[in-house]
Structures are given as C-alpha cells and as structure tokens.
Length: 423
Picture (cartoon, rainbow, N blue to C red):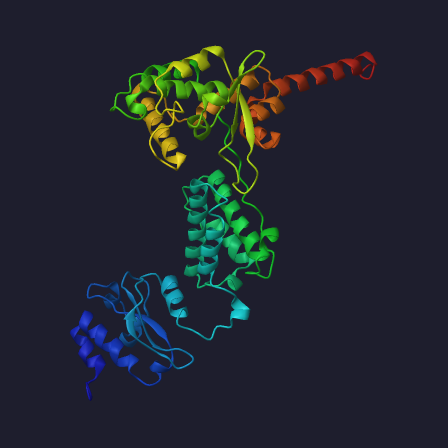
C-alpha cells in the first residue's frame, strides 16, 4: 500500500497489523537479500503487551506462535513466504538450513538424519524388533537434541555436543540404568559412523559411558509366590490365550521360577528338546536375547520330573509348543501379554511390582542364599560374564562373604598364635 505508514496502521493493534508490518518489512530490498525466519503473532500473543518496538516484534520468539520463513538463499534462489511448520526455534532454524545449498559437504558431511536412517536399515537383520526399536527411540532423541541446537550434519558432532546430550537429552524421570543402556546405543552408532567415514573423529573412544549404579534385585517371598500362583488359576478372560487357560499360564510362571528362564525363552519352550539327565531333565535352547549377526547362543536349564510331567500333560496353546499361540511373528507381543497378566494378578492378590523378570531374580537369589557359587549361578542364568551377575545380585552373595569372614578369622587367629599381638 504505497504511501501508507505501517507504524500508523499498527495502532489498530491485533494480528492483522502484525501481519502487515511483517509483509511490509520483508518487501524492502535489503530484507530480501537474506533468508530470514520470523513470527506472525496471533492477536492474543503476549508480544503485543510488551514494549518491544513494532518493527522488532516479528523476531520475538518467546511465544507459541508459528514461525515463518521468506527471502533468498546465498545463491540467489527465491524462497516464497511460507510457514516452517514449527513453533520451536531450533527446528525452524533446521528448516531454514535445508534451503542453504552452499554448505560445503566436505566440511559438514552427510545429514545426521540420513545417516541415522542408513544405520537403522543396516541393523534390521542383526537386531530383534524390540531392540531395534530401542535404537530408533534413542537416535530420534539425538536428532531432536541436535536439531534444537542447529546441528544437522554429521560433521557438527563433537565430544562436547554428545556429552551435553548425555546430560540433558533424556527425560528427568528416566532411571540412570535406563539412561546408561540407551546411551550405549548412541556409542554404537558413533562407532559405526567412524568406521563408515561419516565422521572423521573416533568420538566413541573419547566419550565416557553413562555411569549408573544398578539397582539390586529383590526376590518374591514364599508367601508372595503362593499368592501369585493361586491368583493365576483364577484368570478367566475368554477361550484363547493365557487368560483362557489359567493352568497353562501358571505352569509358565513355574517354569520361569524353577529354571530362571527369561519370559521370551520360556514362551518358546519346546518339549522335544528336553533330554533326561542323571538327576534332572535338561532343556537346551537358543537364547533370544543376543545380537542376531552372531552365532546362535545355546543355553541349558534343568527341570524336575514333576514340572516336566505337568507341562507335558497340560492343555497346550499350539500343536507343537505349550505356551506359544497365535500367528505372531514377534514373540515380544506375547511377552508383553505375560507382563500384563502378571500385573493383573499382582493387583488382585496384593503383590506389588508383580512382573515376570522377578521370577528369574527369585531363582538366582535363592541359589545364592543356599550357598551356590556365583560363577555357577551366572552360568545357570546364561550371563555373558560373572560381572553381570555381581552387578545385579551383589548384596545377596552371602556365601562369598562367609568364606571371606572365615578366612579372615583364621588369619587373625594364626597371627595371635604367632605372638604378633603379645606385648
């Protein structure tokens, strides 16, 4: 509108005036030389209550109004006025950077989002679906964190940025052990990025892992086990699945308790792979929790005559396997079903924190209390190292403490006999 003063019109106040002032300023020759982001403030935006000059308000970003973009790229391409689709400044800046074509690829490398996608594709055949999804979640967190800081390319990654992500990139309510597990997946991504040449620096070797103190596991008491098993027999939720077959469901819980099997492995229990040992029945199976590209990891557990006979004679949920049902290719679905059924059982019988993995913990802790050596317990659990067993069950290793106490008492007694403490 030639001859009109935008500052005079702005006295009318409101969204229309702000829109007019933004349009007016962006049509000025100098403004069109750069690609700028700005806000078109709504009528009820708090910016109208401030003392910020009218011609500066479009750059006020501390509000929830949508961010817009307009101008020219460094090579002269016109970017018409349009919404970025974001209210967050960091994401809007990332959108703006997508128009800047004169970014030297040899300096900044490939886009972070592209490398994450390629990395996830390369690991589809190596990782179980559940584990793959965990990688996707944490790498999406990394992308969001970097975008908020305007870091869109692999070349932007450095030790300081990744350390900041480790500190500020996770929800405050997330447990330290979960943070440590998720951050370890970021380290795996950085190690692969260096191997494939996406980054020039071995960041994975320079960044410290997230330190966390593992929570010591607590077993179910004998009374709690009794309540859980009794309540499991009362499930009645249809004709298929665990809720429709309470006796079979209870036997699944007994199998986990007496063998220490993880729920995913227990669901795939195959009676055809059970062989008679000298005292017990030995069941050999391929462990589900492993890296797929590695050779299958076989593990053995032991069943009593009573438990094996009960499973053989129960109502099976499929023709070949007693606990597996449906046509689900992803066994993690059934594992979640077991979790939900146990959660329901716990609420009904008054047992807090009722979940499948505590049956495995109860099995391990029971052996340690009975004096079984930790290396033998570690083997029965299928842990990759005794250190893993120690991390979770340190406070229950009574046998080791007793042996240490006995050796110390003997040493002190020998010292006294030699007259070390005699005046």
